[in-house]
Length: 234
View 1 (cartoon, one colour):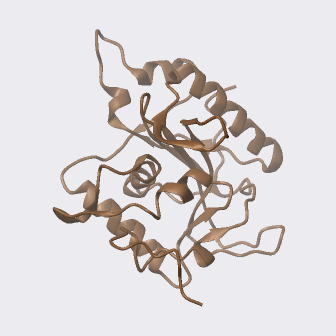
View 2 (cartoon, rainbow, N blue to C red):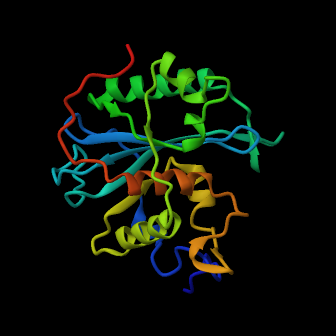
């Protein structure tokens, strides 16, 4: 009856409990706040996570999550796959911003059709805003109908982001959940370990892209408001 999933030195050790934090997939109601976050990558994976915030109302299937709980309900993760279909750890697919944008619009349109969920722009890795020759990756997202805000990456943000995630996971009931269809988040984040030279942050050697994407979202302190704005893209 022991827990055979324990990872010594895991960053989320003592907070993450799969049986408690992993929930069945669902489409967020139209009156729940929804947004997304991005950790950019090309040779390494990119990670786009989609979130909704519970308003405490009962879902059509009877489930109820605490008011203010953040739920990661979908992911788009750019990892190369092997011949057998398994992920090739930490190897990216080298998609352009246009390719990623097109896939995002398909995902967001599908959720909009299912439940009226409208996804708002959320925080993205500052790398996409870096200009070279008066051009940046963000421009390519924007012209393809995808908008982003800037992630918080100042001093102390790595430690604060980890603390926020642990705090939300540790509440009773929890205030952070992940749906079972977010396979790469579940594959990579619970197994990340702390930096042995700085116990307050996650070691950078691991496949931390999905984690960083979530960290940006938690640091952004997105408002909890009914989702009434139209989609940015048409």
